[in-house]
Length: 285
Image (cartoon, one colour):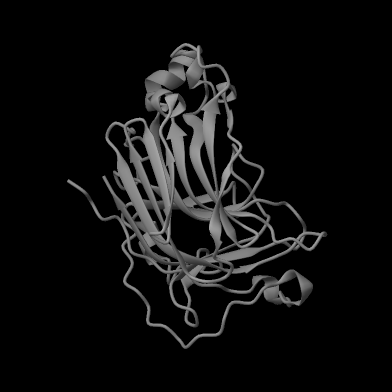
């Protein structure tokens, strides 16, 4: 049975009290104050760009509105509406050099061990907007990953290849990049790789990527991700579709997966930042 995980919204608090405007800032469009949206975070774990980094699972995440640690990075946006994810280069996760304020799906609240396969399938839908983002020294906006499908090794697979953790590559990364939505997936370097060889991260590489035609800029837009056995579909604004159905996705069936959504800033530049607002987010299996 499909299960609705969350409908959420996103907001922003300016970092360190300093002026975040100027040439490195695109301000969001001015709108009237919005009502807060009821949020169900019972099936999400939050990663913050502080600590080692800091991770907060249910039930702790449910108190985000009053938690002084969470509030600078995830909170209700009183102006634009939605729930904002704010991040800046601070501490990163063990398998990435970049910082994030991001939700990680937990089918079983508080546990990372229960996930899903492409054979079981899953759908993630979201309505969101890039609200603010910094620019690099060349005047281009920094890239931000707003949605992902991440792979995971089972404990048996982890032990089989002698890894210390369960981390596997992300099969899907969806970027906000220069006002457009760009998608990257993984492909096997060697299609003749054995089932065991495929479990190693270095057996996979990024494809060339795909960029949707429509410009979303700083406007609200909709994304839908449909994962099925050997197939992946990404839909922008119910209008443009990118369908992946090939041998690489058939091979990917070896992994477990989980959805991610939020603000994964792709830079370590000093003074960089991004704020992403989610107005709705729904996951079904």
